[in-house]
Length: 282
Length: 355
Ligand SMILES: Nc1ncnc2c1ncn2[C@@H]1O[C@H](COP(=O)(O)OP(=O)(O)OP(=O)(O)O)[C@@H](O)[C@H]1O
Ligand SMILES: [Mg+2]
View 1: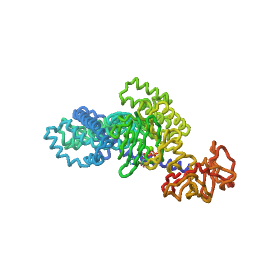
View 2: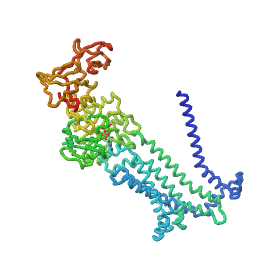
View 3: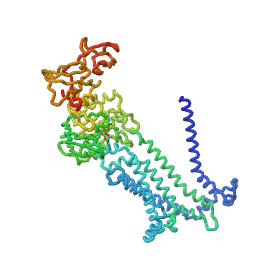
View 4: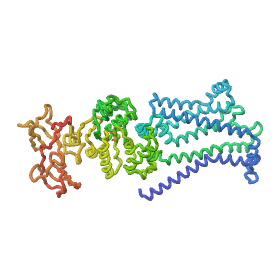
């Protein structure tokens, strides 16, 4: 094979990759784009078939309506922040050492244990909904933000443990052996060596856990009434019994995804920097 | 007191035996090298001394005290790892100072020690860099510096020069040997490079598949190898080995090699030995002569200080190492002699040296 044909094959491959990426972006961005467009349109223009996209039908009314009329949205966002932050932060604080122990310490049957941790995630939500509801309501914690946070913590912890354990297993053991010879005990090695080089996976696990909690609908629905309602529930309320206010619903949704997107961007930078710091070489 | 002693040490990973009955003593202040081919258990042995692996059987003593149950910190060893194992998120200065920080030394003293070690290893301009921004040779010097920054009871080196280019390797060898002469710290060094082992060690332990094949000074290992394996492993060019037969003679024994009879005076073969043997001769003991055993020149390889001449002979191919340059044409008829005083005789079956 000549260099020229190798290069043209290379180019063909690049084109394929780019086309694939474009398709992927369209696939994931189209719903969001549609959400933003429809949040900016008047109800009448939106529900005719086909939607009337003439410029006169665009408006910021939906946003002002939502912000002014629905104090519920503000409270929902606050509640979502509390449960997502709590369940993410605590899952990392507990999950990282647990994952390290399962990856490196002489834990008997570590593999089986790790699998058991993951297995808790395989139960369909509906199967634990009723017992969970009973427990929470007997404790008198229905419609309590922290109770919802604890429930989310129980969902996030196994995921965080599983993600981080996989990463810890992949750290070359030589680095930890060097730390042992240098005089760092298990805790010292974990704090000074393992955690700092694990910023990228910690960030990934954090984003994953946060978004899971932020978007969760089903358990929020059965465990809250009003005060502890999270964003997805508030948005759902725009679907009324007689009429669905699509524009306002989309505006509320647009507002609710903004923090998640912002978070993802912030963490993306951190993850990239973490990798650039030379995880791989050295 | 920092003598290292391994007593009947076995190590297996699951069902796979890696080290078998290793007995080894590194005297106080001595420089001992574990030499062996890849996968023979050198790193595993070193890890057991450091406390990074537990022996399956046997005892490890440092300074006369059994340390099997002590952690690496308690053993007070410093180690240079085969793959460097630098901390990727720390600068060179932080890498060097980490062990002192873990030992709760005050910051100004740490800075002082780090600066001194960096200067001696020519790392001063690199102190603020991350390992990923260093060349292989620079990373290796940081790995060595990390061990030198404190004064441990024992130094352990695991193939510290394997990734360096030839000239840097020779330079680092000399530096480490000099350093050892200055500090006199008991050292266990690992390499698969026989020349490196010869040039740096007080004594060498040749490992073969997890067994110590021979433990002795470089001279003993080279001139009186205990087994055929050791004879083959040591020396460049490799020792010449040809099959032969051993017969009792009038006084001593007679060695028959493809029609040539060598008398070995005063040599009485042990009972049960031979008659099939393998005969080893170092290439520098094969002399090209006017008259002698006839052979043909097959290949001429000048290496500067010597020329290696490959001889085709009915007993097998031999390499002769001749000082300086010789001018021989390939295919030319030639004669050679073997000095019986330098002949090594190995049992063809067991490979043990008979003479
Ligand atoms: N953790 C382990 N589990 C299973 N087998 C292992 C383990 N560590 C080492 N081994 C095996 O033990 C043998 C010796 O390994 P070791 O690393 O001690 O070799 P080495 O002499 O240092 O080789 P090299 O020169 O390539 O570094 C090898 O066959 C290796 O596959
Ligand atoms: Mg090794």
